Image 1 (cartoon, one colour):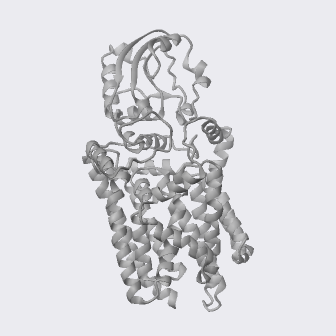
Image 2 (image 1 turned 180 degrees about the horizontal axis):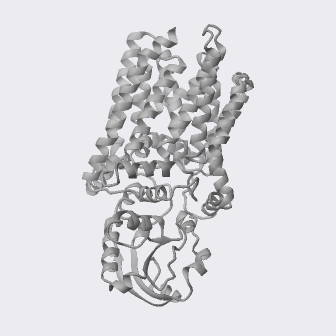
Image 3 (image 1 turned 90 degrees about the vertical axis):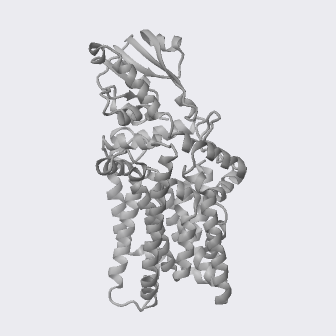
Length: 530
């Protein structure tokens, strides 16, 4: 009865906070577009993958491409707020699930409000929920898995819940299976989280829940849902593993030392929030009241060093933190003692979280025009660190990759349509990377341009599309003498030089004639899983 009344109290509050989160992202994306920021590089690629739906892709499972396809069909890509509506909704669901976890841990309305406010103020969540990618979905699936486990443990450990307890346990196990399975169809790295959670359960008393036949059914669901992507990987000889191996042997990603990785957690989650999620981890690990949920704290203890050892990007831990925000809020309400002091402390901390939200917002979502953002960086003396190595840029990569695309499409469109009609009929376009290819294919789709080919990521699997190289518009960073080695003749016809774009988006555009060997003959050499 106590749990039911607490749920009735928390549920409308959780829905209100979820709605607030969605409203924040709709508003800030309108602001970002007004400030001059366009579509992000990866978003265009996902839209293209959505137009070639499959059970897998070189660098992603299929779920984000399905989300992109739905977005493309329902809203198009002209307005950033609607392009990114599903990520905003995913962010709202994440906030809602945080409130539900507070309820599952035994907390009340005040704890739920504090936890959800903390999640809303997290810098990395503001970032990943503001653009179309798979990253916005990870926390939803992971948090659902933990919510299901906490509920199963609570139901199994109580002898007073009545005859519907077996049905409740079954439903939570099935929900866990569906959520974990969809999570694997969203991002393969979820497997590390699931393994750590399983090991944590095996090392703690709640391991008894794994003896249930519904656990076996849950595992079966996970396998069944993830199977199509596995079969796709087998069919194409595991391109994702090939891509990961290539990246691991390169200097593409920034490799963080353990102290730097830990520091990145504090920076990515934003100021002041450490006073919520870190006590949550400690409460789960050591508090007597949290003994049934000890596995949740232990999962972090296992997962953190594993990610450091694998040289993962620092934000790969981000999906796990709503669990600890929820636990931290419950801990706050238990540890603060006297009601008067507890409410005062919680109120003061809530004000600090709201201040932190406004402080980090310009670093997470591009609400300020570039020059104002640079002035804001200088004033605060803080510049975000990129997770990939590259030449110096004016803007951080997350912002810079929204510039240069319309300029590129305009140039290519002018070059192509300046050709005589008979030349246009045989001219193709070759792009250096999926950003360039997708920009022309998406933003230039109504300009009568041919479909762009590339060897980058899934574009290589889509092949040369019948282009022989008889006449090609080629985007490259190579010199004229280098590019002419493969063609009878080439000439410079354009230059990409948007100052705010990434360094690899600066370079020449060539018009080339008479490739010495066809694209089909050399296509294996064009593979660029990077």
